[in-house]
Amino acid sequence: MADGLLFGPFRDRWAHLCIDMQRMFADETEWHTPWMARVLPNVVSLVELDPARTVFTRFITPMSADDVSGTWHRYYQRWASMTRERMHPDLVDLVPELRRFAPPAWIEDKVVMSAWKGTLHSRLRAAGVTTLIVTGAETEVCVLGSVMEAIDLGYRIILVSDAVCSGADSTHDAMLGIYNSRYGMQVEVVTTAELLAARLDGMF
Image (cartoon, rainbow, N blue to C red; front, side, top):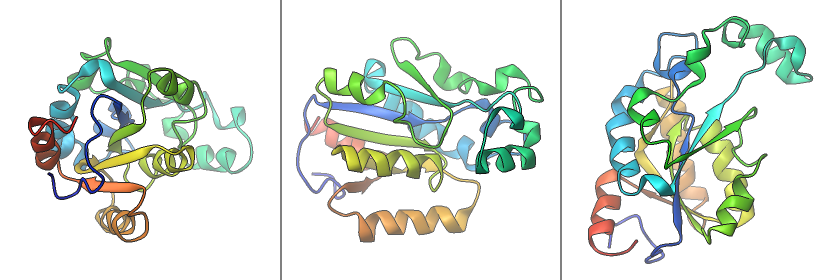
C-alpha cells in the first residue's frame, strides 16, 4: 500500500480533479506560476491513467473589474491585465499538454476559487464518484478552495503533493503541512510515484 493512502482501496469510484492548469499561469503573465512546468509531467502521467475520469477546471476571469462586485472588484482592479478585455483569449485555455485529453476528459469552467459552484458535484455523484485525486494550481488558492468544499461535500481526497504547484514556495510548503497535520481524516497526501504504485497494486 502506498504510504499516504491510509484508508485502503477506492476501486472504480474515483475521478481526477485537475485544477486550473491553464496558459494564463504557465505563460509569462502577471500570474505566472513557475512550478507549473515542473509538475506538468506528473499531472500528465495521472491524466493518462484514465482521461475519461479527468475533470479539468478553468478559472475564467471577468471581462473587466466593473463586471464583478465586492472584493472581487478590488482584486481585478489590481490585476486588470488578467481581465478578458486585456489578456489574449487563448490564455484561458488549458496548457497544450493537457488540452489534447479533452475530450474524453471534461472541462468545468468557474469564476471563483472553488470548483463546486456549477454542475461538478451533481455530475460526479451521478457517476458514483466518492474519491477525488487532486492536482493543479495553486496549492494554497484554487486547489485549497476546491479541496475545502470537497471535504464539506464528503469526498475522500487524495492530494498529489508533486502534482500541485504555487508561485510561492513558503505558502505551498505550509499548505502541504497543514493538510498533513490538520486534515488527516479527510486528505491523504501522496506522491505521484506512490499513487502509480497503488494503481499497479490494484487499489483503484
